[in-house]
Length: 105
Image (cartoon, rainbow, N blue to C red; front, side, top):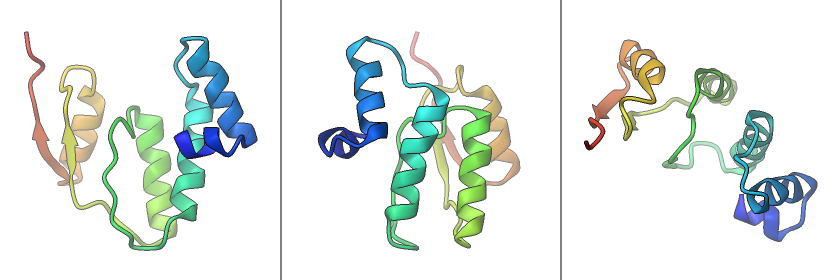
């Protein structure tokens, strides 16, 4: 995201406006940013993501991107088990869930 903002791309400017106003990025904007990153990276280049995917829609779209490039995830770590319950179940059924940390009280 910072790269898009510093390059002053249209999607970067949209993200910057959202962040400056204290708003979260819309799912549409976040997916657009992630799509640009995903398709610009070298195939099979390793990566670790934090905070993405955060919703079932994002997870399903990300899976489609991976499938289109004949790539796959090796595992998923979920930091906030409470807010990510649907994702935990989704990745657990796929055999990708490595860890689900309980939220600190």
